Structure formats: C-alpha cells, structure tokens
Length: 556
Image (tube, rainbow, N blue to C red; front, side, top):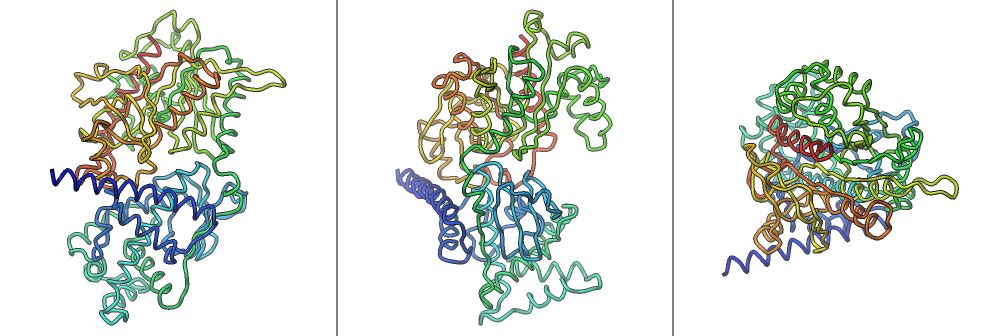
C-alpha cells in the first residue's frame, strides 16, 4: 500500500513536470529568447531534473556525466553545437541559398547553419514537436556542461590540474598519448577508466564528428567562460518562426504538391491507400523479387538488401520499380517527408512475389498506394490534415478517394521487448487524458506464430522521445489505461483522420485505419532505452512483417 501511494505521488510529480516543461518552453518561444544559465534556463533545467527522463540516465547524478544520453543527444544536434554561444531557431528564411555550409545531424533530418565560430542557426520546419525536441536536448547538454565545469575545478573554485592537462592535450600539435588523455578525461567525467575508454571508442565511430575529448572540453570551457567572464550563452527564436509556427505553412506546401501530382496524373478518381512508413520496405516488398532478388521470403530479401555493402541491389530494385509503376515525389517544402506512389494495377504485368497474392477485382479498380516517410510529432497532424483537404481548381473542389490510412511506426514498448509488435486500440495524449479510440483493422492474430511478441492495448502519444519518465509510464501500464507502448505521432494522425472523416467530411467517413508499431526500445528496462542503440537487424523482421500485412489487406 505504501509503495502504491509513493508511486502515485511520483507519477503526479512527473506529470506536473511534463506540463511545466511544455508551458515553460512555449512561454520562452513566445518571448523570443532566454539564457540557459539565466533564471528561465535554470528553471527549465530544474524541471527536467524533476522529471528525470529515462533516456538521460544519470542526468540527476551531480558528479557523473551521462555518456549514453550525451551520445544520443549529440547524434540529434548539429556538429559543433558544443562550441556555440549563440543558438538561433529559425524558419526556412533563405539560408539554403546563402552559401553557408548545411550541417545535418546524424540522426535527425533538419538543416542547420554554422554562421561563425560562436553561432549556430537551426531550421525548424516540422512544427512545435521539433522545438520541444531541440530545447529538451539543449537543456540536457547544459546540465551536463555544468557538471563538467564543476569536475574541472578544484575545491576552491580554481581550474584543476586535470582540466589544464585536458586543455593542453586538446591544443597539442603532436599526437598525445591516448591512455593518458583517457585518464584525465575519466576524472572530469566522474567515470571509471574503463567506462571512459569505451565512451571514447564509441564517439570515435561517428565519422566526421568531433572526438569526445573535444566535446567535453568545449562544453566545460564555455560554461567556465560564462561563470567567470560573463560570456553568456543565449537561445533565440526568429520573428518569422514565431509568426508561422502552428499555421501549417510547410504542411500545406507539402500536401499541395502531392495533390497537384495526383491531378496531373489524372488519378483523382482512383482508390488511394495512404501509408506512413519508411521509403524502402514497400518498394522492396512489391518489386524486390521481380527485380531479380530471388529470396524465398520477404525477411530474407530485406536482410540481403539492408547490408551496407549491397547498395547495387537496392539501386537495382529502385530502377526496376521506377520502370514498373513506382513514382517519387521529392520534398521541396522543408517537411523532410518524401513520398512514393505505387500503381498496383501494373503489378500484374511483372508477376507476383511468393509472399503476395492479388485479387483481380481489386486491381481492376486501379488502386494507388501512397507511402509517406515518417512525420515527427505534431507534424503528423499538420501534414495529414492538409493532405485530406480537397484540391481546389477555381470554384470546384476535388476530394481524394481515400480508402485506407495505415501507420507503421516504431515505438517504445511497455509490456514486451525490442522487436515485438504493438496493436493499438486507442491513442492517449500523455499528461492530458485526451484520447482517440478507433477500430483498428489489424488484430493480434494477424501477427501470431511468427516468433514475435504481439501486444494489444492503448498507446501513449508523448511530447517527445526525451520526456519518457518511468513513474508516468508505470502509471499508464498498471492502471486501467492498460497501455502497451508509447510513440509521438499516433494521436496526431488519428486527430486528423477523425476530423476529416467525421466532421469536415473531406474523406470517406468509412475510411479504414491500420496501426501497428514495432518496439525500438523498452524505457522501463535498464539498458534497453533508445540511448542504448538501434535495433539493427532485429528490426528487419517486424518491419517487413507489418509491411506484408498492410499489403495483404490492401490487395485482398
């Protein structure tokens, strides 16, 4: 009973922290600027520490720098961000033609511009979720920078010997002794020699990126400069960004280009099946076998084509697909959401793969599949809401003939392990209780007997991957919410679908929806969060199994 009361208390505190973070970030955005070590920035940092997200590991430990979380964050921020005193979030404002070098983070699709040695501009074209993501990562980064500074000073507040030696190593022209450098660095990180050695090796695998020595030095040095010389860091938001955020500017451009493409092709009357997924699995499933990759099943074909050394096989499939009914619509809007169209009636001429079966009556209607790359958080609502609006030509309106919407996503799982599959029955917004129940065309039986765990229940839509909190997640699992997983886009997709189908009548009210997620991590399991690394080949089977099931239902 005592444990239950304590757990509820922690869950309440954590939910309150999430709400406070959300409100504070919106306030700072509207204000237009803040200093990370000023009153507002320190308040943001304190709230994030209260929340203590699972993905940031030992963030709340005052003496130890969190390594896994640091690697996760730096993979999603532009190269060299640790050296910058001025970070500015901007809309698409012409910098793409300015001649500045475009810096794209390793694992987050956004354009960034290094203006000079102290200034970084980050382009935000994917809505508020992108802003929350960036600010949360930066807040974590500044928290760890504060620890680095404290560990680099002696008890009297003077620069310590370990820091002086690290600085000498960074500026040395000759190659330094790596073992000695790791020793100094381990003291500054508050980590063991073995942990630091492993971290140095992991960071060195990021080709073209700074070493861990450089990153730690600049994080600590800028913090020391701020405290000792009042060289303040500042985060600002451009007037243009503040003006257009939330008004679907980029989503409207993206959707209009797609609808114009459909109109030019004279496809407006054809049944349209919209799929949110990656841009390789459907192409491989529909064309891989006929393109000459004669594997006995889809999983083997996927494993074969996913190998880095097999680029020629991927090019071979793409070339064949483009000649037999696949069309690409490249993004020029800034959403970073590419699109593929597949004319399914053309599949009859090339034969079928052993894992697919066609219904002749279905193909006679000349159905189309539109595969859109993954959206990011609130961007899912922005793009889908605009896509569902009819194309306007003069005074006439031409609605799309949408028959189904399918979402294949990766998500954190709460009742299984990495690689398992979740079948949602509803999407629930974290922290609000706002919910979107729906009739999912997928059932657990569609994925049984595949040596993969399958779980059915509510899915939690979170503000950001970085705000996963153990206490809140346990609350969603152990109470009558009975949640099975968490992700970032589901509620946004369903909000757009329900509004367009049931209220605005832009699409067929009987539109079929399919949601299936494969588990990329388990935030409740130590060592299995997103910061522990990618799924690798373990993600191939569930990805292609969901792909196959979506195609089977469309082609049936």
